[in-house]
Length: 335
Image 1 (tube, rainbow, N blue to C red):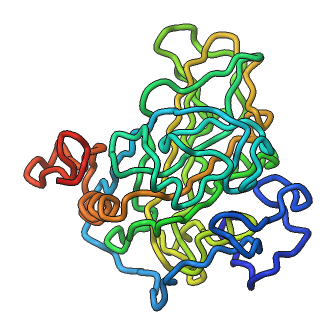
Image 2 (cartoon, one colour):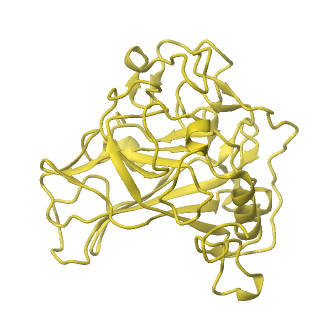
Image 3 (spheres, rainbow, N blue to C red):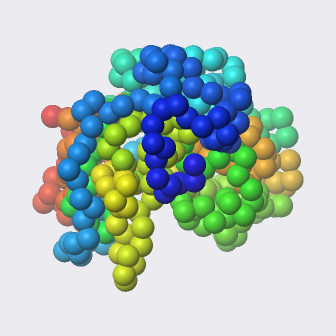
C-alpha cells in the first residue's frame, strides 16, 4: 500500500499486496511474537480514538525537534518486521540503537535489551540495507543522527510513539522514479558539493571528510488502531498539505506522532562505481523503525522539544534556550 493510502479494512490481507518490496508469497505474515494469530495486524492496546487532526496554526517556532544519536551495533540478514522469527531470510541489514535486534525481536525483548543510542531510554531498533563498496561492508561510524521532528504544522499536537509501533519507510523494489518522488525524500544522496542524486554518484571527492549522505523522512500520522499491518506501512501516513503549506494529518490517520528523519553518513568516497546496497541499487534504499523507547523518557523528550518548540540535542537541551534546561542528566538518563 502506498504511504498515505487508507488502511486495509481488516484481516485477512489481500494476497496480491506487495509488502515492503517482498511479495506476499515469500513474506506473508506468520504467527510469531507480537502477532500470535499471524494475520499481520497488531492491534494497539488501547487504541487511540476521538482524535481530530488539528488545522490550527500554532505560535511560530522555527524548530520543534530533538536528536536521537544512535551508533551501528551489528549487521545481519534479519528483519523482525518483515520476516519475524525467520533468521537469515532477509537481505543484509545494518542495525542501530538496540543491541539485541534480530529476527526474533519483539517489543518485550527489545525493552529488555541494551542500546547504542546516547539516550539510555531509547531501546528502539533502527535498521536499513547494508552498504557495500564491492564486497567490502561499509558501516556508518559513530553516532548517526536520527531526528524526531514535528511533521505537522500544529506541533503542539504531537504525541509520543506507542510502545511496539513499527513501520517500513520506502521499499527495496521501488523504481528510481518512486525513490525520487517518495514523500519522505529530502535531497537524495549527497557527497561533497553534489546533491539531488537519486542513484549513487559515479564519484565523490576523495578526502577524509567526504562521506555519502542520505536523509529520508518517515510518515508521522498514525491510524491509532494498529502497531503494525500486513504491508508494514498502511497504518501510517504522511501529512497532507492544506492551504499555505500547512501540513495536517489525514482524517484516516488522525494521530500526530514524531516525524523520524534518518540522516545517514557512510565513510565512502572516490570511485563509487562499485557501491551498492544489500537490497540492490541506490534507489532501493528503505529503512525500518521499531519503537521500544522507555515511555517516560520519550514523553519527556517530545513534550520538551517537539511540543515545546525547541531544537534539542540527545539530552533534550537547546543551546539557544538554556533557561529551558535539559530533559536528561549527564548520563543521558531521566533524573
